[in-house]
Length: 115
Length: 113
Image 1 (spheres, rainbow over the protein chains, first blue to last red):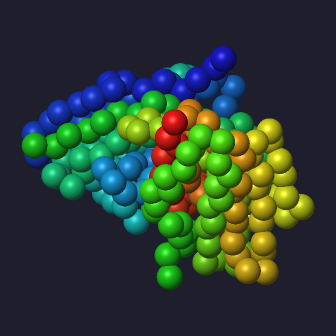
Image 2: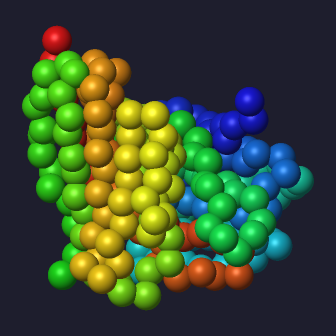
Image 3: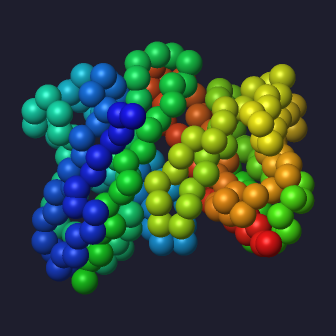
């Protein structure tokens, strides 16, 4: 069964460092997303991406964040200068095209710990 | 008012019990509704979509009440494996084919032997 894969599963970084979280969406999907979940909190939308550009972003997705699809398979989230409050589980998701709310499939997540 | 609100629980039930969760949403223009399941420290997984007419999938029944802006999930004959957090998810608007999801904080269910 096709699945969204994310690497690494866990990353520890020092405050102020840059991190890149990687995702391989399901191959025939056209829409890609990043969500995050701070421990004990709800899952929050960060950004959606389609046709090599951002479709929508939330207030959380400020100038410290960027996304990229560097090749035909990877989808990355970069945090330029990490803060303690960036510690969270980051989920990548992808969905097929369509206007009737297609199902979003989630990767297993990257647990980011900023120290 | 929070966009999607759920009772956090936990709901502690014995195996075989029937349990129901409710969820309310604030945006009356919301388009689509789902229940996701999340196991501890795992990714959310779609459990079922929720339609105005109500829908059933095995032991699970979902209902939508647009007038009152709430969604429900009923689980019959609970199994130990049903223990998880159940996330109410709403799509606030349709955006040309993609689905930005708004999550509730989730309701924790613990099924005991």
